[in-house]
Length: 278
Image (tube, rainbow, N blue to C red; front, side, top):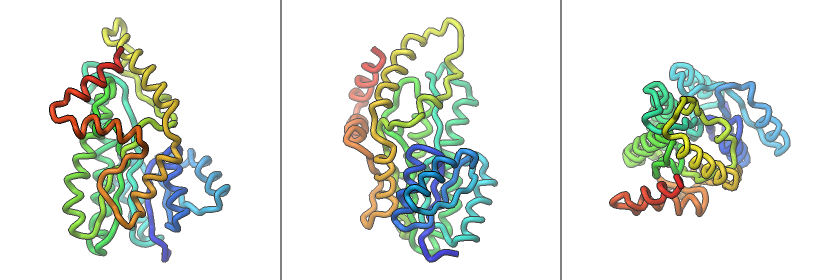
C-alpha cells in the first residue's frame, strides 16, 4: 500500500501517455503506467530514471476486458484504491466508409470507446464510495470534428466524448470529476501506425483524395505540438483544484474544435474539411 494517490495511465509506451505518466509522477502520485506490450517500456523506464521519478509498469490491453479488470484489481491490492484514471490508449484506422469493413469499425470502437468504458466502469464504484476521483480521457479534435478518411477513428472518438459527457454530471454528484482532453496535431508516430489496409485495393476511386488528405494530415502532424506539452494539459486536468469537462491542449486545438462546437448547421466543418481534399 502507499499513502500517495494512485494514478493509472493507459497507453504509456510513447507520446502523450509516456509524458503524462512522468508528469503525474512529478506531481507526487504513485503512477501505474500501463501498456499492451511491456516489452515496449524501455523509453518510459529510461526517461523515468533520467528524471528521477518512479513509475510502476504493468501490462494492460484495453480490449481484453477481463485482463484489464484483473490488472486494476492487482493495482488496488498492491497500492490502494485508484484515485485517478487516465484513458489514453488509442488507435487509428485510415479509410472512408466504403472502404471500411465491419471488423475495422468494431476494432476502433473496441479500443477507443468500449475499452475506455470498461475501465471507467470498473473504477467507478470505489470512487463513488470514497466520494472522490478523477477520470480523464484523451480524445482528439477528431472527437468533435469529423475528418475525411478517418471515419472509423472519429466515430469512436465522438462516441467516447458522448459517453463521458453523459457520465460527467452524474459522477459529479458523487465527487468524481470526469474530463476529456482534446489534442490537435501532436508530433507522434500516429501517421506511421495508421492502419491503412483498407486502401490496398486496385483501381481505388478514392486514391487521389486519400493521398491529398494523407499528405495534408502528415504535414500537420509533423509540425504539431510536442507530446510533452500536450501531456502537461492532461496532467493539469487530472490534478487541478478546479476541474472542468473539456480541455484543449493548444490554441490550434481550441480553434479546430471551435469549428464544430459553434457550428449549428454544420457548414463550417464541412467547408473546412472539403478544403483538405484539395
